[in-house]
Image (cartoon, rainbow, N blue to C red):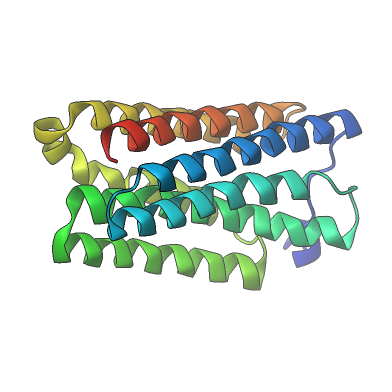
Length: 216
């Protein structure tokens, strides 16, 4: 039996305590992300570096901020349903934002620009799906795209191993943290989403340190 679209897109019902925890964790993350954006801009020494810092930093801030706002509204409200869409959209933005410095600064050249555009084209397709159909239709597609887009960074593996081992390690460990976090994200058990927020926070921190210290 097919479920109604409204039911599929209805945010999961969580306790007030859970939602407060979810909002606070990513509210704090948003503050750290703003600081991270400023530090990247200060360290950037080329126009490309500044552009990448703006894109990456903006996407990182939006991811944490949208998540915080989504969890700040009461269950059953139209505003919460709207912010749930933005919450999913922000995950796509984070993936694209994180990889932009990799494509344009580490890979570089015409090929790096082309690959960056290809990834963003796929990300925009995901954004359109969320905007039109909502995050619940089909949720499995979004989770699959999150994983595939996140691990397309394997293309960097041979070159990173040769040229920038520390950046490779930070990228790999951050990716593993995010991927393991998908497990509680996909679960519907009490407290699982709160756990997912910690995986996202630490995955983002690991990637930021890798980019800041070994790419800029």
